[in-house]
Image 1: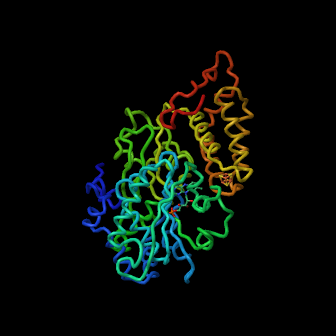
Image 2: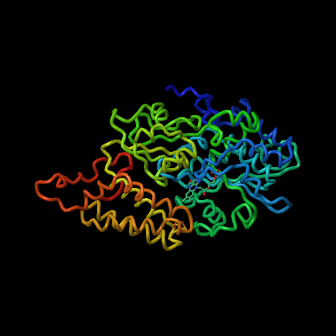
Image 3: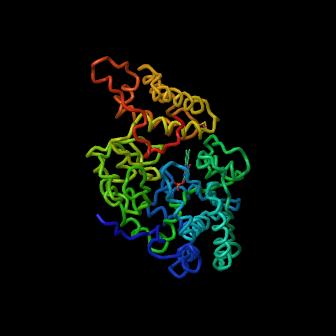
Length: 443
Ligand SMILES: Cc1cc2nc3c(=O)[nH]c(=O)nc-3n(C[C@H](O)[C@H](O)[C@H](O)COP(=O)(O)O)c2cc1C
Ligand code: SF4
């Protein structure tokens, strides 16, 4: 299957230098904002609501509905662009920020107009520091063209756009931790409710949307809700950028309509590296459950609801592939190590749970554990699920619960006492293949 679908987001692949203001403007840039300014703010929100655009940051929450929660009135309001992109295997926002930044700025300004915000903050992950400077330069280009600042596009609406750098903490991608971080506080999640729509940045109503979500907004304004709904499926319309990594022939970003299957996506990305057998798929980086590469899974449509129906999440669509040489115990250990490191420590189930999961997984992996430890990690993960303050605590249980669900025998092989002369004496070789999950766990 060729990747010949029309691209809405990764336009840099079709139009060189679209990230520069002049090129973007010559190719229909800021027409969406111009159209929005000719409409009443509520009409803009309703149009985005009608399009059924769903948030691309992970949860798939309806974007227009989120905007409609913002209170009306004269108080300060804000838009925060979530450009923290730290999920392992996710690198789609980076391409948009680097190569098509005006589409993101324009989308954020349309959102700001719809809720009548006074400022947009682009919260960019600290490691993208060089991109941040380029974004600032492009904001200035948009300002010169009167799309940022006072009396935008000749209207009587004023809005500024700022870049705010993170400092390399995964948890600051969680929206309320991000707000604390922008305010100069410790980057830890807030207790919700109140939700940011009511009490967000500086206690004011705030919309937080992902980079890719907002990049969808200008074409929706220009082409209409019906056009957007004609792409993808009814409940998951539009295209999605799939980040392909791990044991795949052609890793990279692929923009395809939602509703294509895992199998079709794999074909577009050149198949499994070296023509090997596919063993497992992580559809959503480290935070969604692993899936075995069964016929049923491969034929599953990539939509929010279809991936959920087979027991995982579409999330940010960072698809990590693992071939049949992958050691699932190592993979689970590696992912837990990440979550233990990134847990902010504010609540006990996540702080203690990730520590103990890592500790016992390390023991299993190093063959210093007993079968009871396999039961123990399952119990710890169960105790954490639904009991943590933010979703990181739940994310951290996914690698353990899903690896045990499908590959329990691999865990047991590490802990069972080998009986001389029996097949179970052949315990798996530790760390058979580390490539798909990275190799920087200190063994
Ligand atoms: C631990 C954690 C990390 C997150 N990291 C990101 C991130 O890097 N980028 C992102 O857009 N959303 C991230 N999210 C989701 C955000 O909290 C939020 O739901 C999202 O920005 C909303 O945007 P959307 O409605 O456009 O999807 C994260 C959530 C959690 C719990
Ligand atoms: S679940 Fe983890 S990351 Fe989230 S607030 Fe609690 S300790 Fe922090």
